Image 1 (cartoon, helix red, strand yellow):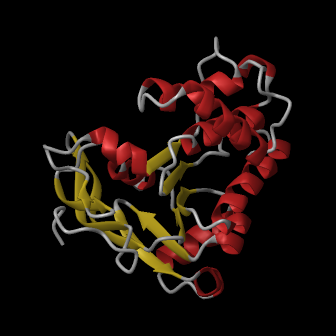
Image 2 (tube, helix red, strand yellow):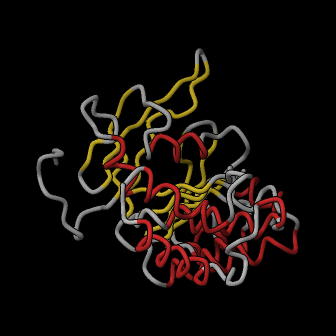
Length: 252
């Protein structure tokens, strides 16, 4: 399928084919392929350094790939002629670090990209931003600055900020890794709400209980390859590859 063909929902919304990526002499991705259908929740797990975060960053063209193909709704994400703004309208990403602007309120953080990048009407964007604050359960915190919010609250503002661009796919890169245990749950609940509304989600996560409950499909990566994948029930109860078995035995 080339980028010129219109994408239709019966095809994978994200199509990753034989992707390789090295940083210097270190091969981080070695021929990774996976497809994500619209509305699916995909969880990617694996040891540190197995290429999980790099793969997410390749999907929204933050990191260039060496070879292979990544398409989002038929857009080839590493086409030199690609308009990255068009891609980033489709793909939202939330990182481990919240990266909020400290001198702007929660509401202003959410409004920034639609107003400054998409040049949308400020009053309309504010209405949407307030709805998003409510969606991530932060009503009443619109005028709080990041420094006045807990880590979990800041991460939910970061999720709302990503949603303000109306993406079709959300990427979550270990978004609970930097949080206190008691604030992890409120962020996971927010992601669960999104998934239940039909948002296509790719998550790199260490939260196995959450992955087991929410994922449509699990992927286990090790040393730059997908070792094993399958539906969560089968994946957790009956892992076939010794590397998967060993990894799960260490963390479950």
